[in-house]
Image 1 (tube, rainbow, N blue to C red):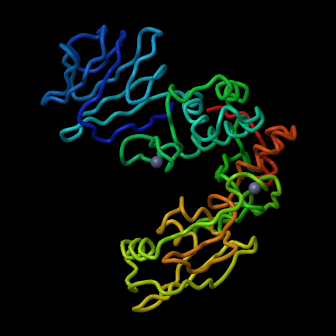
Image 2: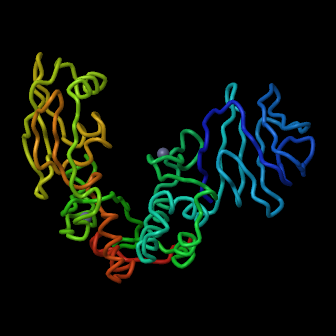
Image 3: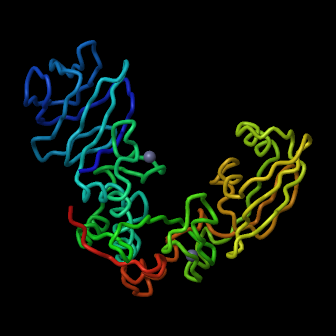
Length: 349
Ligand SMILES: [Zn+2]
Ligand SMILES: [Zn+2]
């Protein structure tokens, strides 16, 4: 089972029409609602129409009809917890249903079958390896890009569902049979990167650079970002870097794959050195899509950054995966191309 935090503290919730099983301190165990009802926090717990529920309840659908929430839940359960003056909402689903709710959000059901299967194995491995990531908040994963984007049943599609079903229980393991860290990105721009060149914690032998000519020509392969001076000044100030207005940006070093490794910011009141990936994340990782810069200049009140690829560049390149799948490479071959020395294995708990 995987527990996904949908809300840490929401003030109201809507529960769709249908029949439910509710466990905990409740006035009725099997309420049926003909219309959608609002769940409202009270002193003792919650009310939903005329139902009274205690501070901790678990709700499951007892008929096959879909039921609406902020996301639609077709299987599993919803746990409600009174937190302060709000409600914490956690969706509890099986690992396979979790992957079904993630796959369309991280890919597209228009992608070739082998690419969808590769991504299903990646998402499942991620889920099993990183369970408890939000342990302090009382669940495993959030529903956002920080973990994996989870859309619940609303995100399920026949083709992505089929990819999950056909790879059921399959995960990626290293030579010792341990689950690997399945990081991926949208487009590498020609070469993937070593983990240690991007993050402080790195060194995994399966996260090493590969030459990838397969994403060439994809939409994010080449880009130009116009980054206003004020944006850079404001973001670095908010990040606690106090050097005044930035007058120049110097590139101090590159990684072997050609990504910018460290930059020096020359400000009115001093200089500051930092990792290029950190600079990118501080300023705007959607605007500065990668650290594979091919040019940097000043024009009309903006920094003009020319670059290639989208994302950190470590692990699997999704556009490369898509094109390899179109060339009839199998999902196992694709995964072994981007992650060194790994195997697809069946996971049993
Ligand atoms: Zn998260
Ligand atoms: Zn690539």
